[in-house]
Length: 383
Image (cartoon, one colour):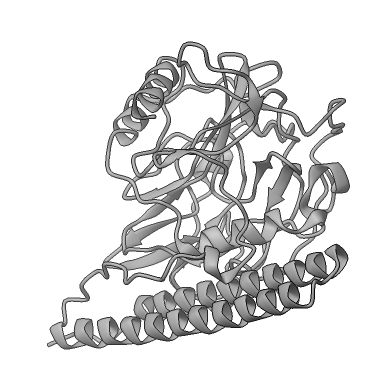
C-alpha cells in the first residue's frame, strides 16, 4: 500500500501539487462537481472565528454532496485554512483535502468568495495573537471591533461569475501554483479537526445536501458554526451557480492506483492506513476515543495548566459518554437477536443508533469548538 501511495503522489505532483502532509486522502471521480452555489455569508459568531468556505465532497453511494461553509476558531494562533479543491488529473477529477497551516496554500484557483478569491486569503490577518477581520469581504456584524477595510483585492480582481468548482479539464480553472504556494505545499500541515470531521459527516448523512436532490442549490449552504444545520445562523443558497445534471448512471466515479494490474472499482477514499472508504459512524463502537490536543502556550504557565486540566476533564466526560452509548446500543442489539427481530425492526434500530452516534459526535465537536473559543478570547496582559 505504501508503494501505491508513493506512485500516486509522484503522478499527482507531476501535474498539480497535492497540499497534504498529514496522511493523504485520495478520491477520484470521472465527472466534474457541480458549480458553486450562490449564498450570503452568515454573520461571524464571535471574535477569533475564521471563515471556511463550503465545497462539494463525494460519497460513492450518494455522489456529490454539499458541505456547508461555516465559522470556527483556528486550532492554533496564527493558523489559516487552505480550502479543499478538485483538480483534473490523468483523466479523472482528484480531490485535494484542505488543511491548516501558517500560510494559505494552493487551492486550485477556485473563487470560493468571502476572502478566498482563488489565491491566498484576503479576509483577515493575525496580529499580536489576535485575528483582525477585513470587513470589506467578511460579514462580521457589529459586535466585532478588531476590523479593517481593504478593498485592494476587490479592485484588482476581475470577477468571473461562473462559479466553477474545479481546476483543469474542460471548463475548469486554469490557475497553477505560484513558487510560494509550491513551497507551502512542502511545509508541515495540520489535518481538519474533529469538529470539521463531524460537520462533514453530518452533511454526508443529510440527503438534502446531495446534488442529485438539490440540483446544485442546497437548502443549507452555510452556517455560523460547524455541525449546526438548523436554527439561527443557517443560510440557504439563493440560486445554483449554474445548471447541473448528474451523468447517466451517477454516482459513478472510479478510484485508481498506478499499481500494475489494478482494477477499476467504485470511488473510494484512500488513506495511509489502507484503501478503504471512510464511512459515517453507525454505532458508538465505531468511534475512536477522544485524545487530548497539543495546546498552544498562552505565555502564562498557570493558565496553560488550567486549560490542560479543562481539556482533560472534557475529554474524560466525552469518552464516558462514548462508553455509555456503546453499552446501551450493544444491549439493544443483543435484545434484537434474542427475540429474533425482523429485518425491518433491525434497520429501524440501526438508523436510531446512527442518529444517536452522530448527534453525540456533533455535540462533542461543539464542545471542542467552544473550548477553543474560550482559549482564543482576549485576555488581560500578563505581568
